[in-house]
Length: 252
Image 1 (cartoon, rainbow, N blue to C red):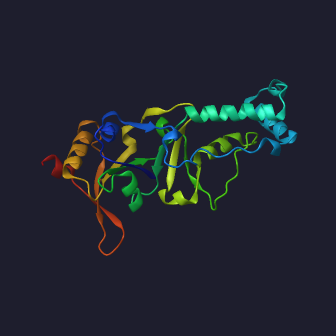
Image 2 (cartoon, one colour; image 1 turned 30 degrees about the vertical axis):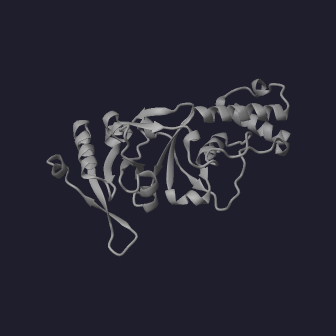
Image 3 (cartoon, rainbow, N blue to C red; image 1 turned 90 degrees about the horizontal axis):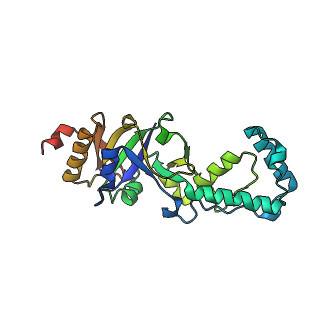
């Protein structure tokens, strides 16, 4: 399965740095364009019961081989919930997210994230052995305008944390997003060069940018990559891709 990263050609050359350094950036949720993204509300304290906290402690004790007595801190239910909420919020602040898409032919994605079809799209293979792509999950889109708040005492705690990072409104469904998450870590992460399989140039990409990109790939150990160019399908609101020969551009 290939996953795609849409990019524009920027003055800072960060897109070309992906090739130069074989690194991808795991960003903070704070830079996202959706104010609800990673910002789900928490379940109200009054909705928790003593049974909820007992089930949670049993789960943690069993999973981490910790005596349940050590989890009893003498805190009230509200205090325990506040402590766990603080832990989750701190973890969220320190974590990084790499957003990709399962679809490389989405016209809106090319417009929004690849500079109005003047940019490119990287196609990566999903390899769980690569540390960069080890923890991935598809984004789930809510069928209506409501969602379940985050439960700090969830028995399936790991799944609840994943849900915090991977549920969005149905209005974003067109993105077909797939996310990789690094808990308590963000910034640049190196990927194996072999996981980058193809580069697709937008239908309005310039010959100069195509040439520079192909040359950089040739000079930095990405000779195996397949290059393609998007073009409009006649009489359809649709894109198709044509293979291009890198030799044709390296001679320009």
